[in-house]
Picture 1 (cartoon, rainbow, N blue to C red):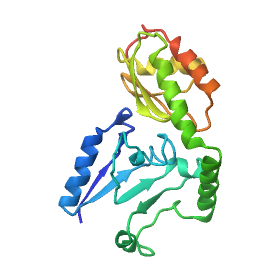
Picture 2: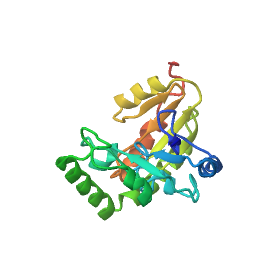
Picture 3: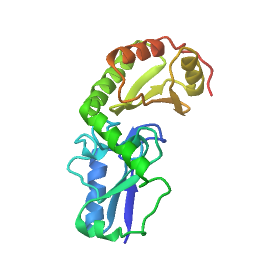
Picture 4: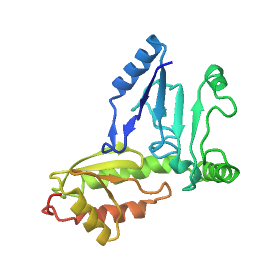
Length: 220
């Protein structure tokens, strides 16, 4: 059986959301050709994008349900764990004991860490917090007046800042020296992925640091 694997937001490519119409068309093509649609939510899942999974957002994948979802990273609060969710009994039946294995995926400590992490995310409203704080972060950067920033993109707390020239590593080093960790995900883009527990004051502090980054830093 064939399958299409995609990220609804391409993380390593610079936090680039796919066009929602494209995702809908991929789902339709998979259905027409009896192929599976597998959505990689390793970076985007477990509340990161302001929804439990990015495909659940109508502004990213309207009405689309994948056949399989992969997840990892945030699910166990930093402890190594990963897994997959299959939708429907027919697909679930394909995963028989011993047919799919992972060193860390199903061990008792990892499972306990994951259950505790999911409980905290649910009880503390961290999915909604990711949506609110992400919007605050993007709007703050867009409105800070620094000519180095020509736009923001992303969802929830998986965001990127587009730079006016390719100086991402210099910006990253400057920000680190002023107490803020950002990721130079591309020569002309910064990735911002703060913890889901970030509060409004933390976001304001981050925006203040970014607003003071010199616009004439050297290119990478």
